Length: 357
Ligand code: PEP
Ligand code: MN
Image (tube, rainbow, N blue to C red; front, side, top):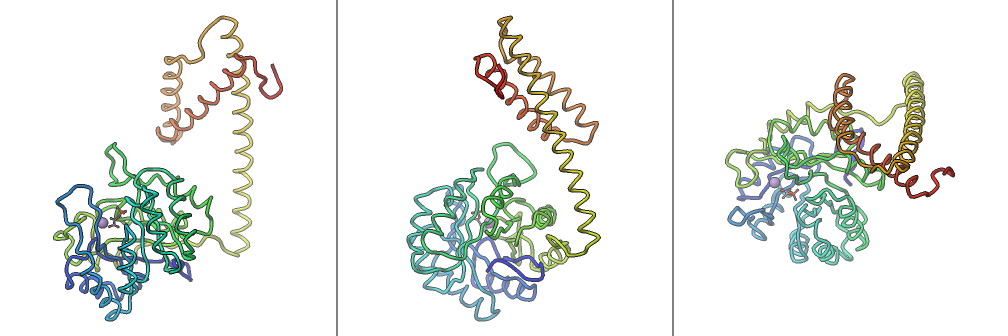
C-alpha cells in the first residue's frame, strides 16, 4: 500500500469536500482513467472559521461506496474522532487519513487510534499544522501502537504567520528529517494544501518527486470555481491528467556503471569539501576562543550587536555574489555565530574546550 512499482508515484485525488452525490460521482468518473490509486473526499470538514461548509457527514458515505462500485476506485476520507472512524469503516471506506488539525492534538489522535484497535485499515497521517516533527512522529506512533500496520505520512505544509506564495509553508527540511528518522514510512505530498492555488501545483509536486516522495494527494473538482471549499486550489480532472503527465519521475538509483562511477567521483569531491568546511569551522572556533580570552582580560561582553549585524550584512553581500541566498546565509551564519558564542562562554567561564584552557 502507498508504494507503486515501476517508479510511478502513488496517486490520491478527488474533491476537497464531498458536496453532492452528482459532484462526487462526476469527479470519480473524470478521474477513473487517470491511473489514480485512491479517491479522496472530505466528508467531515474541519474549518478554521465557523459558518463555512463543514461537510455532509455520514449521508455522504454511501456516495463513496457508489464510487467504488462504479469505477473500482478505492476511497479515502479524513477522520477526526472515534465515531467518524466507526462510520467510515461501516460504510466500507478503504483508507483513513488523520487531518492536520487532529495530528496537532494527542487526545484526538489517541481517540482515533483506540477506535482503530483490531481493525488494521491503512491510515495516512498528515503533518500537524505547526512545524513540529515530534508531534507528527508521535501521531504516527500512536496509530502504529494501536496495531495499524500500513501507515503513511502526508506532507501538507505548515501554518506560518508571515505571508508567502504558499498557503502552508512547505519547510521541506521537516519531511526530509522524518524520512531520515523513519526511512521505511511512505511519504505523500499534498501539493494542494501546500500551494493554496492552482498555478504552483506542478512545481511543488515535481519538487516532492525529486525528493523521492512516494506519492501525491491532489484536490480535483469538476467545477473548481464553484467548489464549496478550497475553490482556489482545486483543478478539473482534465487539468489533473495534464499535471500528472507533465511530471518527471526520476529513479533513486541505477545499475549503470558509468553513472555510478561518475556519481562516486562527485560524492568524493563533496566529502572532501565537507572535511575542508569542518576544518575551517574548527579554525574559526579557535579564533573565537582567543577573542573570548581577550575580551575576558579586558572585561568586554561577548555579544556585540553591531559587529554581528556587520557580519550578517557582509555575509549576505558575499553570499549573493556567489549565488547563495539570504535565507541560507542567515541560517548558516546564525548557527556558526551561536556556536562561537558558546565557545567564548566556555573559555570565559574557565571550562576546558577540547582539553585546552
Ligand atoms: C483536506 O485534505 O481537505 C484537509 C482539510 O486537509 P488538512 O488537514 O491538510 O488541512
Ligand atoms: Mn481542502
